[in-house]
Image 1 (cartoon, rainbow, N blue to C red):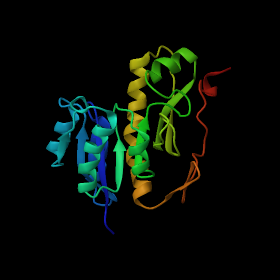
Image 2 (tube, helix red, strand yellow):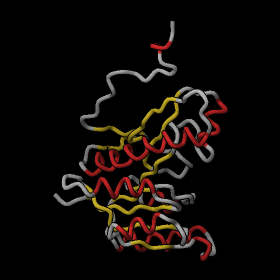
Image 3 (tube, helix red, strand yellow):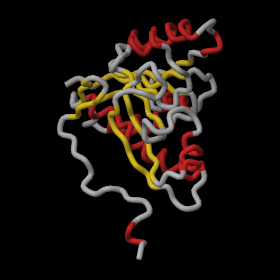
Image 4 (cartoon, one colour):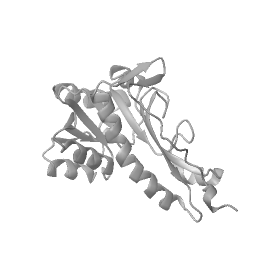
Amino acid sequence: MARLRLAVLISGRGSNLQALIDACAAADYPAEIVLAVSNEPDAAGLERARRAGIPAETIDHREFSDRKAFERALDWPLAGADVGLVCLAGFMRLLTPWFVERWRDRLINIHPSLLPAFPGLDTHARALAAGVRIAGCTVHFVRPAMDRGPIVVQAAVSVEEGDDAASLAARVLAAEHRCLPLAVRLIAEGRVRVVGERCEIAGAAAPFSPLISPSPSGCG
């Protein structure tokens, strides 16, 4: 069976790109990265891609007159590489409805919160300010509204006493590195079906035990 052809869009260090590179190195992984694109010329993730032998391009959004012109330039190499799934992995640009609809149900994003809670930026600081006990991350299909769309995978992470935004972000990021490759695997294996605005996943099972924070074992 042919492997699903992935493009990964980044704006920064590319740690989630690296998680996908590592996953794709396994012989039984059902996807391969055929293209990495950044809107930032100095994005460290571009070098990660090149070291792995993945074609890497920069399409600087500042060189275009408007968002649609930028997205048409972005669309060109994706179509040329016969991409089957586009992964937004720290891609810090809002996409227009034109691009989202062109890649509908072939475009996923990873966001560092348990959506629909805390869409947008500064998620960890906002979660701490709200006093939540459990944070996490979400992989979802992209829709025109920011950080909305059918959810594929989520992971929950406990908020610990003394956490600041940086310490919480580090633990959530470790969960992201597991969730994004899992979501891609499920999609590549044909196990994900979008029904309305929900995902149905064949063979999916919920964890046996709930995550409770603070742990009841520490209570009298």
